Image 1: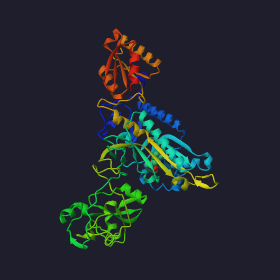
Image 2 (image 1 turned 90 degrees about the horizontal axis):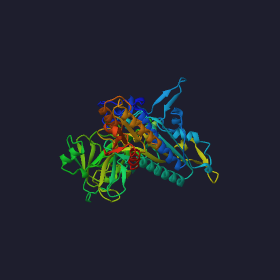
Image 3 (image 1 turned 30 degrees about the vertical axis):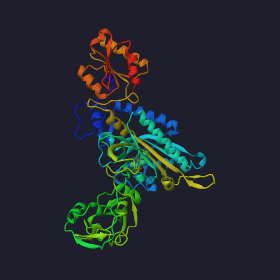
Image 4 (image 1 turned 90 degrees about the vertical axis):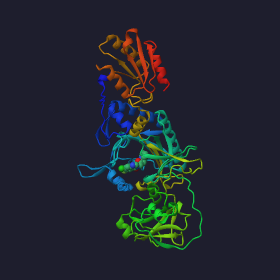
Length: 565
Ligand code: 9G3
């Protein structure tokens, strides 16, 4: 391919809000162009990489009998009203009306669409399991699209849906997809971890996330250096140390003027935070609920939301604290309340604790469970801390940032129930189809690879997904010897089924080399000063290693270097 015919709008400057390395480099190297916030054009070089990734995905899907198709991006809003998800995602859902004023949504994911398609077709256990997938743009009106392709409002996803007739078929599908995703991420050269994921609003029981370690990543991954344990912080569990057991003392009100926060109460009363109960007021699907946790911990909203199976969970407003909790903001407490009270496990063995008295400037000391505090259930809501003992006892927990590039869920029957997708089982009984849903964020994957592979001079691609295998550069296009040599090498390489980009532009050498580093093809062959001797320079982008070889040796040397990648 002649570079003069390609469209690679390289640029020196990047917008100030391009903080992520991948975002900066993909802009500077002319791989992407923003059309609107979170919506990017994939320019020729990026689109070639995406297609290479897609082909790897197709090969791995073929191996597990998953079948590709594609569905409309627009979905009748009624379908999401039927599944009950229309109201779950609020403003993040892109909606539109057609000329007949019928409402549609732009598909953010397609559990409903796929279930609608298979309904009444996959209606017998003899026809299951089936796994269908597509690779299509998804639309999510993110509040803060940023970091280029890492968090977009229109982004490319591979989304797969499994339809099975029993748990073991679902387990097998889940495991097959996990292995297929591992193969894909291994082949594209990504460093990743498979972690326990937050099933969130998906309603599924098991889920796993594929996370690419990267400083820019929005996920906090908790892992143990000494074991396989790794989890999203929204799921992570750890061991904690209990307080000393004491005999219950008499409950007593104490004056704590203006001491609202745990730190203020701890300081004012001279008690440890581990002996204070933090009481929090939440509205779960508009029901008031009080959540207790030991003062030195924080409630993890995602854990709490999943535990409550709530669609909407938020902290109560001051007005609600006054009206619905009969309390005073900053002095909330469980003693005497008729609101439902649930508590984190760290509260279970507390005694003679300090707790808000639901009155301004007043706390209780010596509050004890059962006698003073009625907890309806205990569960793990806390956010784990760095350095705590891993739940498997393998050692201290470490934190790292990660980019979620894949997620697989055992969905169950949430969508087949709501949309009536049933099959006849062996005993002739109607059963809801059991589903799995799986996805790779292809746009994010592209960015994650760049985050991990790029350097200060630009992008770096490996052999598996590079837009072109070799960059051939005649330094001076007015020098016939250099052009001739470059063309001879190019046809040799193409005869070896290598893809070649020839920089045939009338640009200064410095520009050609800088832009070659920027676009990041794995191997560069330069026909320059020593062209008259038939000598070219071969340079490996990733390592910088360079070799001067004769025209005859060059093709073999290039193939050798590529084979090592
Ligand atoms: C929405 C919006 C955002 C969303 C969803 C729906 C995330 C939503 C979870 C999934 C689950 C799996 C198939 C591929 C793999 C992931 N964000 N999720 O359902 F309407 Cl606005 O997408 N779907």
